[in-house]
Length: 429
Image (tube, helix red, strand yellow):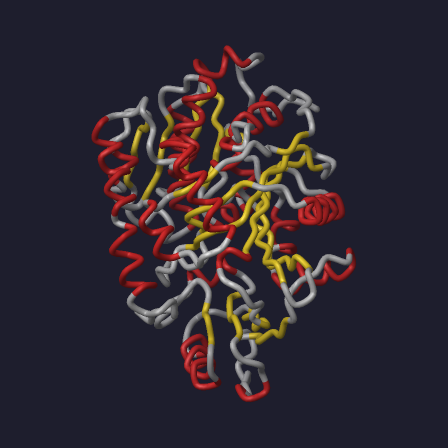
């Protein structure tokens, strides 16, 4: 495969430490996962991190050139100009641009030509494809074509000023979520949640009214609730070549999700596994659309018919992609091999047993239902050691690891507020 035109001065792994400069946008667990894995794989001593506020576990790291830019996302021009300024600052470096959020993927894809002209390698799919497959209605149309199961689904189009709803025509419980996550994230919506768990017609009416009164003008998805807790949820992360052939996969059972309404659905504990049915469906989808780079799928097992139902594709690394490293393939090496060195990547599944875990053992014990999944999680927890938690990195500073530990322990009061005290019901904030 060809090298990227902006891959300056890097012709072997030994060149990466000296000439690669990752430029990371965002301030979450994925951002630090990039930082630690570039250091671990290649000895990269500094990554630029752009964020809108001071995230201590990143700003205290000696591996980051942390640049706080309030208002960075107020206008796309703010982000593009800041990145162009960085490119002028480091003309001798190979600049690799990576984000940690759907909004970042969308902005990078929209501005891809401009950012590449500035000197960046932008390992995201072209905007036409991204905009197509991230619309959930279109995603499900493709799943229909390919015979990939997905939940029974209805749509509400909020671009229609005359839109109304009959809340009594839907089955309950159900799930409500935006078809366009990036646009929804940008919208000003009262009591906004990433995903709404809806148990009654009255709840759905309140959600509808709050969105109708907002500036969100895309579709909302109403879906049949697939029974089962977090232990029925699965994740799949893939890396595909320029022809859409999946080269590397990793996945697992999402044993426990975040129940904070602002972060609902983010996996906090994943037990590595390979389900061939899931992997084959993901590969079929990516080949069909000609996808290049990292993708992340959300799936849930439906015990009613034994199917694995696909919810969506995220056109980027997932927040938890560090689990691919735990499974045996350092995930950042795929960016270097494909987009910079132009090397062939040997097809593989990162299937070494792992437990990706961002919560203390106490949270697992108190939150997970009794059964074989919980038993296996606790067994792996005791066996795998601190490497399971992406924010702990012995090669980083003491202040960084102190902040990482504080975030880790803070999961206990978070779960008390958002899960234990509510008997597992979603809390309104």
